[in-house]
Amino acid sequence: MADQDSFLYALSSNNAWAGYKAHQNPNFFPKLASGQAPQILWLGCSDSRCPETTILGLQPGDVFVHRNIANIISPTDINTSAVIEYAVAHLKVKHVVLCGHTSCGGAAAALSDSRVGGVLDTWLTPLKAVRQANADELAAISDDKKRTARIAEMNVEAGVKVLMANFTIQDAIRERGLQVHGCLFDISCGKIRDLGFGTKGNSGFVGLGDDVVRGRHAQLVFRGGNASMSVR
Ligand SMILES: [Zn+2]
Image 1: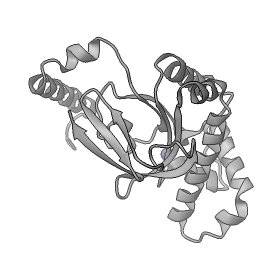
Image 2: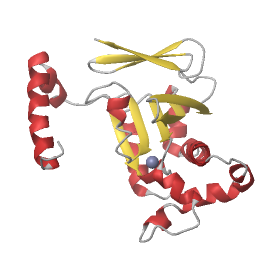
Image 3: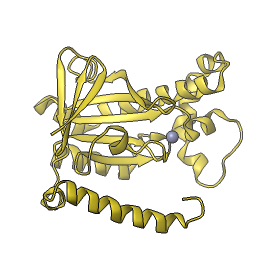
Image 4: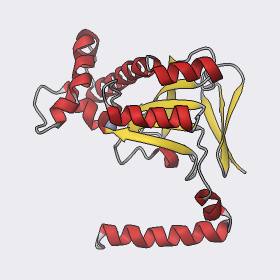
């Protein structure tokens, strides 16, 4: 890919992918075109290393998505709020997953005393507030990577609190047992860890028993914090 135009390469890759999927399952695209019924709303970081459907081992149609820089959940952000409302009140997803990740550039920027510039410092303000609120704990971590991962966890905890205060989410938890999860994706090993925030007690990621998320072409089973996938 190094000596090719990356966009042209992406288009030819798409063409090959579409041909492969249609060959593998002739009903794949007609079924996708008939509508969506995802069971997971994923709120994550825009980072290119965190493509939710890929890292979950799922398929198009399985995950409704909103991603922004450093997966910041702010109650006044109409973009995030509209996605949550559509996914929860209309698509009636069963799980809301807020997932941060290690080596997050936004988290590292919030830990820095220098400005990024432009609108980015304004966007990162909630994350800087998380840093200020936890200044002592963060300052005591000498390893840069661990400190960045820790503030990413704190950011997820703060975001889950915002989610749990969202009226659409509160109604769905009460009326139909919607589950809210706070997670961290470890880029160095590819695994997602449940941080235990959200609807603890009835969480399929950390609770007793299994929780099955059925995608259109595969299913994920969450058991004791570990996920396994089988193709249907
Ligand atoms: Zn990030």
